Amino acid sequence: MDRTSHRRRRTAGLIAGAVAAVTALTAGVLTAPAASADATLGQLAAAKGRYFGSATDNPTLSDVPYQQILGSEFGQITVGNTMKWMYTEPTQGQFDYTQAEAIVDRAEANDQLVRGHTLVWHNQLPGWVSNVPADRLLGVMRDHITNEVAHFKGRLIHWDVVNEAFEENGSRRQSVFQQKIGDGYIAEAFKAARAADPNVKLYYNDYNIEGVNAKSDAVYNMVKSFKQQGVPIDGVGLQAHLIVGQVPATLQQNIQRFADLGVDVAITELDIRMDLPRTTAKDTQQAEDYGKVVRACLAVSRCVGMTIWDFADHHSWIPSVFPGQGAALLYDENFGKKPAYYAVAAALGGTSSPSPSPSPSPSPSPGGDGCTASYKVTSQWQNGFTADVTVRNSGTAAIDGWTVTWTFPDGQRISNLWNGDLTADGSSVTVRNVGYNGRLGAGASTSFGFQGSYTSSNGTPTGIACAAA
Ligand code: XIL
Image (cartoon, rainbow, N blue to C red; front, side):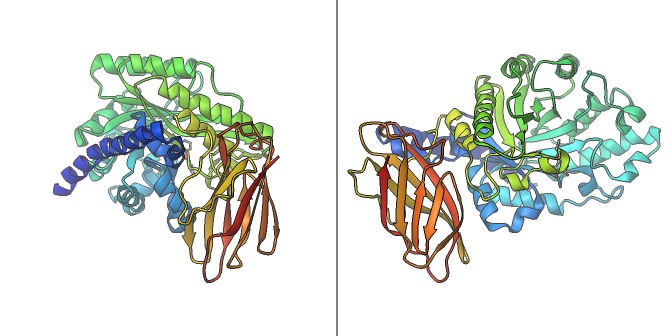
């Protein structure tokens, strides 16, 4: 009990704290524009009174570079799998929250908000549930909800109480709950959740309800009748598993109409997939699409936050479910930030590309060439590291390309580099711009990053220089 109330206080203070921190940062930006580059997506969203988060799954818990980004970049975490029924009540009456808690504990240690996902869903349901006789399933569903919601009481901001209950034409999906309990099962699920924790916000969550269509109309009508009847619902989750070039034109209008019913809206599982392979054109369209989604949410005050369905392409569920498609997230498989990342940052009010930030030993190149480069190690583990290099047009006219060179002092080697074109000759490194980041207006900046290896030490490069084209 003590622990519960402690957690609740902590969560409430957290949003305020995050907003205060970013407000301070934003205030600094007025006098020193370059500082905004260090704001994470989570901080940028918090400055707008929203969260920006990511889903995550248990196998990544031991992946150090992954956790470094997950723990620092995002203000909110959704447990991607292990809160689902098959994990939490694999056998009737035997509850197991070990895996879900491993993620929640880590999120709390990182001061991140957590969404609970999901209590009642036709997928990832243990087989025994389907064998429960019709007259006992309502009780079984209530027990499941009551136990899980009570278990996490005070630690979560939202619960996705019911997931994916409608078909595309707006009819009810014929899940075991629908068939054995009937239309009333959704309202009963929300009531059970409210009784178990009066404070956590209760969401209905679904896909293909981002725009105005038959399915979102059905959800709209359900929410409207719940509000009229006093069924406790607080929010609607738009999953937003979208396709490049196909963000619904009615997204903002749809968010607004739900908000007008008196519920919050969250973008809960955002990813924007493409036919593989990636091309610069598809990346550019994807970046635009991500920007549109973020702007639509920010335009409606009751759209409280956005969550991407994991953050790096090699951790996405898309390739396994939509063969031939993928590359749907903000980071590539080497944890390089994609154009979509910068589009999200820009839509959240940050700079469209990072600008120079202090490095442990800042090493800007001498001016005069029209650009400067500064190098910063962003994470380091045994024998490996990632670094970001920010390239800034220090001149008074736009430049159309840039070349950054340096020498590694300790025999470091680059294994993967993103947002740049690498030529390495032993310890000598040359990186040129790629198509989409060569042109920089006066004072503008961009960045590239890489993952590298080192043996005994990882000293700052010498002779770092930037030449403009
Ligand atoms: C997905 C997970 O990401 C996969 O790892 C798992 O195999 C299947 O479920 N809608 C939802 C999510 O509500 O729970 C789904 O997550 C993706 C679609």
